[in-house]
Image (cartoon, rainbow, N blue to C red; front, side, top):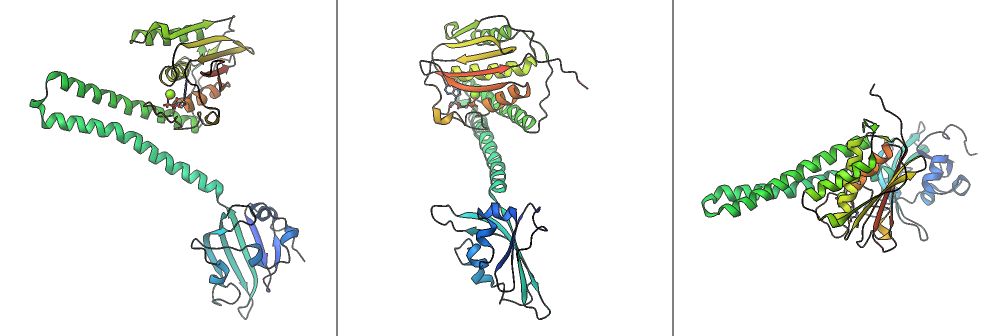
Amino acid sequence: MPEKGIYDELPDGVVVADADGRIVVVNPAAERVLGRSADETIGHDYRDVLPFVDGQGNDWWACTRPYDGLPTRTRQPERLLVLPGTGGDKDRELLMTAAYCRDGDRRVTRLVIMLRDTAARARTERSGAELVSTVAHELRSPLTSVKGFTATMLAKWERFNDDQKKLMLQTVNSDADRVTRLISELLDVSRIEAGRLELRKQVVDIAALVRRDVDARIASGESPDRFRVEVTGELPEMWVDPDKLAQVVGNLVENAVRHGAGTVTVTVEPHDGGASVTVADEGDGIPVQARGRIFTKFWRGAASRGGTGLGLYIAKGIVEAHGGAIGVEQTPAGGALLRFTLPAGTPSFAL
Ligand SMILES: Nc1ncnc2c1ncn2[C@@H]1O[C@H](COP(=O)(O)OP(=O)(O)O)[C@@H](O)[C@H]1O
Ligand SMILES: [Mg+2]
């Protein structure tokens, strides 16, 4: 008889086989992990239900022989095993542990197998490792250049003229800026991920904030023809964090300038009791298949133009911390169109 109840609420899969190796228990978590119902598995041989192979492709049960192997063995430590896919299914990796319950003659009376899906764990581990390696790589390239130029200048100071030295120092300077920027972006990322993005909200004139961003770009050498700011309609009183909002606008306009082309049009208008800001350009736009990914960490388009791939991730984090939303579309001419909306907001008081 199948035993019900005791294993039902366990978060891990439990499969129990009796003294003859017939499955007597498959709890709901195991049904989920295996993708097979208890009805399909109860009464079958454990080797048919769980045809595990190890990393080398060896039949796991033939290697470990739970029923006629070493009579002193009482458990099998956690192992990552492969459950070969049947039909068109893919192979699956599962974490497995087993306990051998023995009677007075040391015969196995029950084989208790615990199963755990590794997909979620593997994903977080992989993304952690990927993050470290991406960050290390991003930090190394500017530092390599800083090191290279300073070492060269120190070794051959007399051989360079002032213009050459100036050029090298400018490169060193901008690489140092790049490292600083990357680090402050990483700090933003960690605040966003920890849910600790602090907003200091105040009444902000969003149109003026957009104009300030554009004016600063023109002052630092961009052509005024590249920008158009359109303000339509009357905005409500907007309570937002001015520095963070400037960061979002700055990221979007910077992207339009750097990744897009032609005139960058920023439109500010009322939306649903709050405001919406649209940044559109006349470049090639963002391919449809990439649109789901542009807001993820470190995602960059094929033609890397020196960015870190964190800009849009941070923009999304800031907009969402304000209770707003951000999305990507395209202009009728095919350029990129990024648009975010913000609720009017309420004052936030520091506690
Ligand atoms: N206006 C745009 N036109 C075309 N591609 C864009 C635009 N804005 C963003 N992208 C694409 O989205 C990617 C991610 O942007 P972002 O997160 O700001 O990273 P970064 O600017 O550092 O590359 C960019 O690398 C680029 O490929
Ligand atoms: Mg960017």
